[in-house]
Image: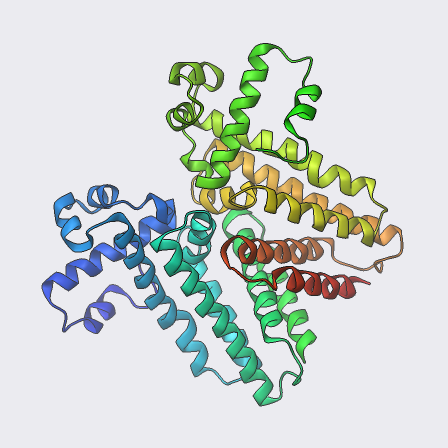
Length: 209
Length: 209
């Protein structure tokens, strides 16, 4: 998986890590790749051992259970998401420019991962499977929705949005738009998808000005 | 799976079927249940045989392969979708009332299936798995989007929408809204979801008036 940082940069970033941690990072990279393509529920210790040519007992020593492995893959993905989607948007100018940066970053994230956004696919798969993995996913989704709310607050502060807007509604509207893009982009062979997404975003922003 | 028709009504509907076909229908019902909860890719001949207490060879005689089984489950779901979502909307008054009926029917459909809409979850899972199942799914998604386009055309004919609207954009906008509802409803424990969806729909319709 090459996402935002290439392998060298990422090695540099984690240069102070121990050998054990470095191995673990490689496993998580391979696990995220597998989860993006086949779905998180398909990533078991056995399947990932096969894909990485490692022993099952070696992987078991790192993760102890399938659920822990899946949770660590989600946490690893969340770290990349934060570095590639959230933080660069926070660096952009507050208000509408920041919202547009966030949308662009999210779209790049979805395009980079082979099977689309892991949080979208895992939420679809785990919505009906109570347990540790769903709990982490739910927390991540709530944090994401909270980021959308906060980005709307920043647009109110700059005066780009009017003061009486409903932040929860904004989060619902923007996330819906991204989910529409996600299905059209990953599933349908529709060359107009990006244009539809841009038109929808302009209209959405107009509703809050 | 009890959806729109209860078991008796459905039996009545299929009263002229042979015994073999009736068995097949029961298997497809169980298969759709399993697909809604665990994901379509988890429905194999072996897993479904276990869930229905049937022999693998018996199921194999009906479906010949996992792919055929998955395709037949999708076709069965499409028949229920047509009966429960599309046709009742076509009976509603043309224009905005028909669009609102379609949205309500779609929401009921998603609420009735335990893990949410099978077409949404299967599209997430199969977007990166080329083959027979993806081909059928893609065709079903295109038919659905075409229904959304046609329903917008009916609203232009009644004068509810203005004449210069972009039907593809309308389909993208409305499907995005439903996908947003789907994620919030199946994944998040958010009591405001239905209110957000209704507000978003009113704004969406206003854009096309």
